[in-house]
Picture 1 (tube, helix red, strand yellow):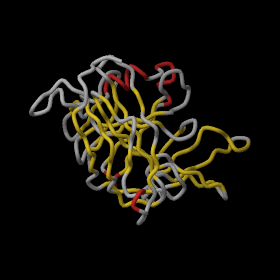
Picture 2 (cartoon, one colour):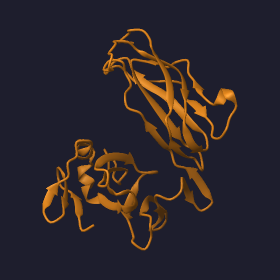
Picture 3 (tube, one colour):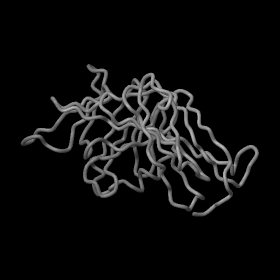
Picture 4 (cartoon, helix red, strand yellow):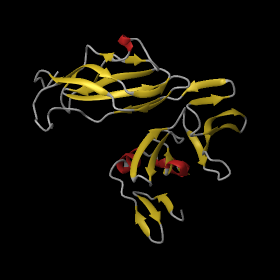
Length: 246
């Protein structure tokens, strides 16, 4: 690309002929407020050209090895972050002779020997004969009647959700939310919905504890070989009571 990216002491930068700050209104404070500054020399970065991403891996909190990453997608111009697998990673590189990045583990398998992981490959963590699922989830934004087009100071009730996924392996769904912005988060009973054509009672997810004034839906896959693509999921929502505390 001929563009260089790096992190300074309080901002992210790029150089494409001139030095420019990379706007980051999402997690710049998260990065610098949580970076273990005494271990800052261990921060490393690498690229994932296929997805248009730059990863900065850093020791978060009291960690002494890189256990979290902030990611900039230059193609879509947005930021996000993620914890790193196991107890973290010590180094990473995108080698041009391969089409996937490599990262080194933290825990040695023997004297001065560490596992070299090929990332962005498959859906499981494979180490010899050991196969472990890689947890994947996403969570919707807040759903509420408070700022709806026809605003109402009422809670929402969801009794049924119709998941729309092309999926391999079982997935789960949890309704999350609060009575107000200062109230504690309440999670519903986690419901499992399987892959493939199912009986009528498995084609939708029913809930008995789905009342929230501020509501979110969490979908997760955490089974070996699990994978998914989301379509248009449908939730059957209706106004409930006006309680704002609990």
